[in-house]
Length: 447
Image 1: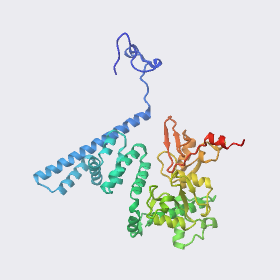
Image 2: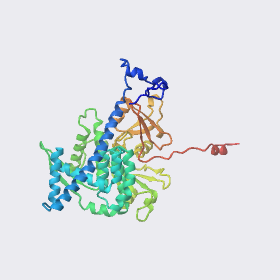
Image 3: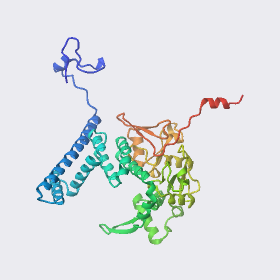
Image 4: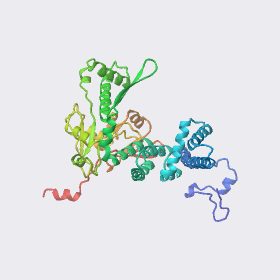
């Protein structure tokens, strides 16, 4: 810090005259003087940025060290490349006090960022993204063919620089699937041949029952179990948790083949899944259109053959048809079992997830919250409703946070923290916002 000791200036720093600190006050050691208190969260963010920068430097140094070791091995011919790799991995694990598997991942990530994703490495080195964002990016893009990887990388970096890690992972996965939609049917046909059921022993007389089945059916089954468990938990004398109730309902259905032990309202619950199909995709001969593939809530893109089957089949599927130009909802399907209110359907469909920053809870499992509380005059309208998971609903009401729906944003929420920081959470499917032209009103007014 520098001070101007000339006669013209006696202020050490600051733009506001009321906040100037005189040099002689500072140098005289006055007991009542203290530097401005730093913002504690800014200190945390500063360290977080330093961690990202150091992570980038570690990648560069690990990459350089590895290639130096491999070049030396090739020159001396004292060991094979494979043995040199194993020796290097062991030494790194010992030095960092981590497992060899973890050391191998450090080496692989360094190679990926330096060689294949230098733009991501630069973003990490400037603290524009975190190390976790870089890890997610590498894991998602590395399995892809190089040409597709290069097409996705710029948009992936945009997402990494603006989204929390969980949201970034979901949106990057969806982006990859959209870009690979033309091969979705073939890949699903290959994958479905590997379906199976596995029992894995656990401790204390327990076991895991795992099934590898198509994702649409898995989501529907889990949704039905959750709905049954929720209905059971409504009983006043019920003490089981939601997880326990889901497991018990699964056992009843698989072992007995029915749910006769439960009340009629529980037995009547059927599986529901939300399928969003852009109109032009549904009509396209090969199921590929600029509007993107059909998407199942909580699953992702599905083959067009599956989408057509669902859109024309069972009434237990909720079908959402979107306008090919505006994306506005044309139909949310009112013919399924025990349909919720149409407003709740649209609020849930629009958000896709809990509308708290970074939360990944599917909106179908969330509570519908009035942004402006009902008792404070908030209306029950699309412009005042958003899904929040139970935990974030509690934080919103009792944690000192406030949320505001951003007018004209299609459903985005602005969260204001107790510290005054603002975070904007956009919905997965923004709803168009329509304004009436006053000239139209005037021209239609009666004479």
